[in-house]
Length: 244
Length: 213
Image 1 (tube, rainbow over the protein chains, first blue to last red):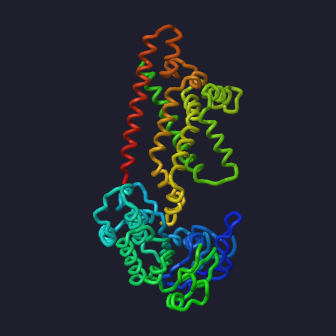
Image 2 (image 1 turned 90 degrees about the vertical axis):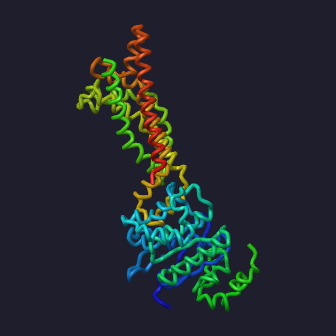
Image 3 (image 1 turned 135 degrees about the vertical axis):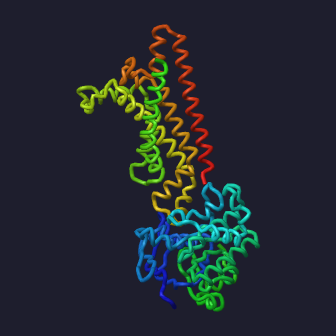
C-alpha cells in the first residue's frame, strides 16, 4: 500500500442524538479510486464532507497527508484546502454562464483561465454548445456535467465525488464515468467516489468500502472487496439481499 | 431656491444611503451567514428597527447632539451632518433586514459548495451577495425611499433652516402650513420625480447586475 492520503482514527460524527459516522480506523492510499458504498443514511456524504475539510469530526481525527504534512480539520490553510475538490450530489451553480461557472474556481485562485483548456473540457463533457448559456437554463444532467467540469479544471490532487451520475441518463453517466477514469488513470488523482451503484463501483474502483448505519464494515482492494468480501454483510449488500 | 433645496435633499439622501449601504449590506450578509448565541435577539432588533418611528429617531439624535448630550461637542445640531446621521440610523435596519432576507433566500448549500471549490470566507460571502443582488438592490431602494421621503427626524435635528438645512420634505410642510398649496404641490412633484429617477436608475442597475458574468 502506498502512503495513505487520509488517515482516520477514532472518528465519530454526531448530529444531535444521532451518531452518523463511527470509524475506528481507516487509511486511504494515495492515487487510488476508492468507491464508498452504502445505503441512504449510512454516512457516505458525511465522510466525504469530512475528507473535503468541510466538517471536522465530533471525536477523533481525520488527517489529510499532503507532501509529508498532516492537515487536520477546519484549520487547514486555504492553499491546502484548494488541493481537494468536491462535486456534490445536488450541485448548485452560480447565476452566470456555463463558461463562467467552469472558470469560477480558477478566478478564486487568481489564475487566468486558459481558454483553450476550458473549451477542451467543455467539448469532452458535451457542453461546448452551452458554453455561453446561463446556468439557470440547464437541465439536471447538464448541471451535473458543469459541476464536474468546474472541479476538473482545478486539477485537484484529490477529487471527491458524491453520486456524480445520480439521476443521469445512461449516455451522460457513461461520459462522466469516462472522465473520472481518465482523471484517475492519466493524472494520478486520488478519487473518492460515493455511489449507490455497485456496477459503477465495480467498473471504476481500485478500492472499495462499505458503510452501514455510519459504521465501516469493510474496506479493501476492489478485486477482493467485490470478489471475495471478508464480511458477510458486504457479501449480502453486494448480492442485493439487504433491505433498508 | 427650489433647485438649491432639491440639491440639498439629494445630498442628504445619497450621503445617508452610501453610509447605510456600507454598514448595512455587510452586516445583513453577516447576520444571514453567522451563527452566534444572540442571533435571534439580533434579528428581532433588526426587524424592530425596520419600523422605527422617524420622530423617535429624530428625538434620540437631537438629545445625542444637543449641547449637553454625549455628542454635543460635535456641534452638529441643526446642520446637514445631523440630518445625515438621523437618516442613516433610520435606513440601516431596512437595508440590513432586506439584505439578510435576500442572502437567506439563497440555498445554504451554495456557500458550502463555493468553499469546496476553494473560496475563502470572504470570497464565498461576496459571491453569495452577488447571487442575492436583486434583493440587495431592493433593500437599497427601500432605504432610499425611506430617506428621501422622511420629514419628522430631519425637521427635529435639522431645524428646517432656510438656505442651510431646508430639504424638500420640510419645505413642503412649511409651505402647507403657510397655505401655499401650489408651492407645496410643486415641491411634492419634484420630490416624486427625483424618487422616480433614482429608482429607475436602481432598476436599470438591477438588470445590469443580473447579467454580470
